Image (cartoon, rainbow, N blue to C red; front, side, top):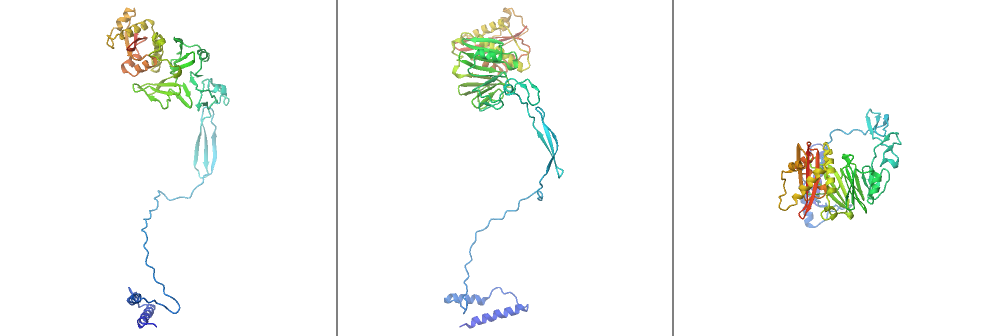
Amino acid sequence: MISVRRITALLSVFLFLLLSACGKATLPAETAIAEEEREEIVSQGTELQTDTEEEETEAPPTQTEPSLPVPPPPVTSRQETPTHTHSWHLKSHTAPDCERAGSELYLCDCGMADQRKLSPLGHSLPVAASCDKGGICTRCGKTVSAALGHDYMQGVCRRCGDAQSDPIYVLNTKLRFDESASSVMLKLGAPTEILWEGDLMSLVYAEDLATTTVIQTDKNGLWGVLTFDPTARILIGADSFSVAAFPDGKKDPMSDTHYLTVESSRIVSFTDPQTGAGYALWFHYEECNYDYMTDPRILADFGVQQRLSFYFINALRHRAGLAPFTYSATVEGIAEGYASLLTDPNMEFDHDGKTGDRLENAGIQWSWWGENISHGYVNAFFVCDAYLHSPGHRANLLHKEFSHVGCGFAYSEEGVFGAQVFYRP
């Protein structure tokens, strides 16, 4: 049966709906009767039922995770415009040739222009001539006198396909490690001078001071190469070394000399301290190396190192735009005697100021004179480089007033002493 309270509640709802239809009812905040009835029903454990359906119970409210704030839309500098697909048409074309670049001009229907540069094609030379000798370009017919030089990558020239093992490229000529002196001279021609230290032969090529090169050979083949040739390259395995590019080298803490040992080879790069640029490259084969400090063939006669010093000094002067020195055998004797005096343990290693007297005693009248002395440098390559790194010694090497030079070395238990004497008549 339906209780009186329920009948009263239903009548209240009906009355509210009727008044709402007439526009005179206000929305109540809550129906107190319904809430009281709900509490009573729940407390008595009864269930509200009708003859046709069962009332649904309300599910407890569920808690939701807080949501992140929505980021603002990206800021754009201008409104998006519909994508335009260019339709290019070739307007003009200038073909490149072996030496000059070309160009192409493209125009779009919308009026936009696109200028494109075409790189020069480069000369196409016969394989046999392109890397070693130059030749006639097969594309333009022009005679190319200068050799292009090999472009080695992983031991193979990318231009001509040459695949020689461990090649040395110097003075536009390729040499092998097993190259004999006679083979070198067949390729390079007669040297400026041939010098001997025991069975070690030094072939000096100094007709062009800018590319002064010394090639040293012995009975086993090529031993070493020192060169001022800026185009020279030494390929060992996959690595290419040159005066300008010396990868992964170690630096001598005493100078700007860089050195590297690769497989059985020693490679040294000499660097000018004032310009920071490399000026010479020295390679020698470790397996047939001579110890300059102990080898009796070298310590018995320093004549070769004295002559090599002269060639290196002139190459350095040429780089500085100065006239080369004239070598004087008389002054060489004075320098040797001075170096011998320096080996005296009772004599202080210092300049004695008597070189002018020594020159006059040898019958040489001078207007200018100067000297360099050294201790511990036996190899002419390194002593000249050491002088280049000392301001006072460098000034003598590159003095514009000096015209003649002589170099000397002497050996004692204290090591090797050296002297260079300069003068101008």
